[in-house]
Length: 420
Image (cartoon, rainbow, N blue to C red; front, top):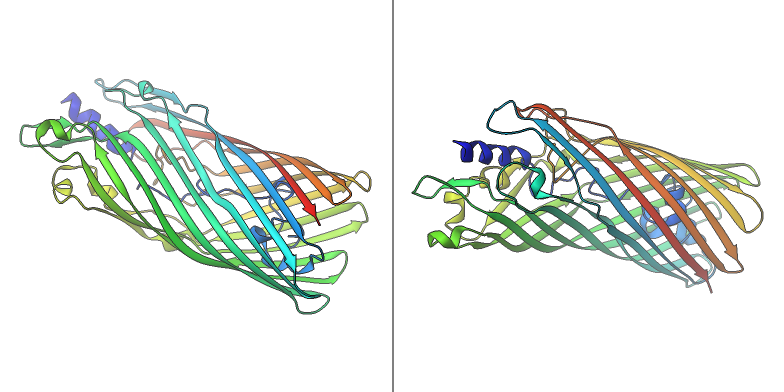
């Protein structure tokens, strides 16, 4: 009876599909100056991070340019649950301290007075979480997830007039995914048995594009629009259940899964009311609702027959809604070489109320706060920023009483840019 209760608890805790695309999975921006200004950067895009925010911004570059930034995403999550079942004690868990590195490198070269070509490599998605298995009741197993997408983006930008620029990138994406968690339980003909440690490792490729427009009717005003198309990554890999070999069954299987990163549309405006002060604001909308269902195919024929967790890994609705982020940024020039920056954004949880909370896929509503400083020496620019994402406490309707989740993320970032 206790094993069955524990198996039910595992299923509830792990109820999300293997790569549920909540707002916590994607990085909220790349480029240190942009991050310091709250990611309100679509109407600016005037440094090396244009390949990510708005490729039209690169049309204004008159020199060769190279830039690189690195950020360290450090999440900390909490999970508390009172089961309401005497056989299962309450849970009070904190995720382990971990690092998930994001980066962006880009090079640009003008090939005429109005045309710029470029190439960027970055991580629009890089995140994960690690829990101490001893915090949960039952056998001690590893609980962890690490997800990353590496994007390779050739760019073309054209200055159509003195005030109108357009640009586009092709986004070639390499996705990686690693997961560890309890495998649950199943009836293997001898009653319910513990399936042991579950692990899966996958990689896959996908393609998409980004299109941008930048309008500058006067020097002090910028208006930007960017669209990032959906990108479907076809994952392939292997999965393993540690105890199946003890019963003469295959303990590993190939698996396939397709995940679509959704449509993203962003519009922004920037204004310089005085020479030293720059203000910016964006609205960035993501079409999470089109993700629909995620299907996983286990290639070992026997697995679907005895792996009970297959019921929601194999075919699962994400229950997500379209959401819009609102972002604000400010930059103040102390002098000709030093700038101070700050920003704020609201990042709503796209998962419908009552669905989608799981300890490997925490998905709160975030309020993001950022500060930063930049220093320019001749053609060299160095920037630092610190971002703090405060996640709202939330719960879901799991059938267990007193369930609560929390998550906060700290993201330092540094970048170097040089104009030749």
